[in-house]
Length: 314
Image (tube, rainbow, N blue to C red; front, top):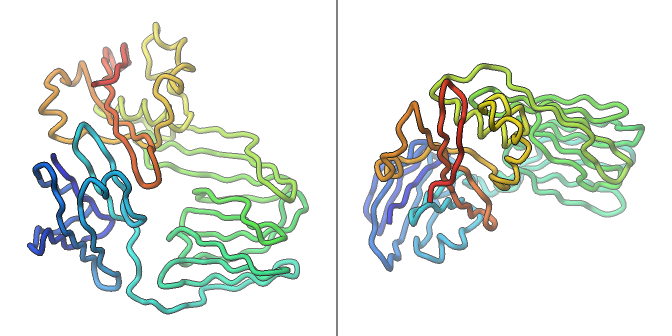
């Protein structure tokens, strides 16, 4: 079995007490035998706490909250992105009043938390992108709300202190409706523009338009195609004339995947039939459970820059 390690920041890796090198955004892998039970330690850069765990079948089937596990063909990739700050203290980041409420954004051991004091007290744990967020009082459809504006993310809280919205957003405007713009890191630079209605209790999506803002490289056309399906952009333009009328069937055919990935070297070596420019492959990521995903691979047969056939690679 091959185990891949990746980390959002440079970190040292120890396996059974032996230093195994640095892990970062590039995959580092190890081949291990059956019935493994390895004591692992991840040591991030200064300012963050190390992680300790036993790597075994239980870890891979039910990952802890600090790791994401991606299963594929008997192998696994473990991703570490949620490190805890070494500072266990509480730090006030921002405060704001809206209506008769007091909202306080704190870092509790480095983790963002918004406390809203209304009739009682509402505690909202937020993603790391809100560590330096600003709090802005506003209105949507004349209903008072509080906006928490994080790094590429937006959260909205109702007059009663309930969280009614949390989504990636580069920018937003609020009036009769809430409108957000969200760029995605895709080959074609997809940008989604979404409009939400609000009735004082819940937010509802009314309209979403996803557009590609750049032309992808020829070697990335198959990735751009799968990303256009994922983000509901115009995927039909990547299909040959015979397949184009069936573009609407792709969501049902491909299922509810959440990411598009590059196949690892081991996969490519075991599938010599994947030979660009006639046939390409991409990995699609499907959620199985909290922090647990399965990667399935699909082949795309191409001619003259258009996809002629799609099939899952068993």
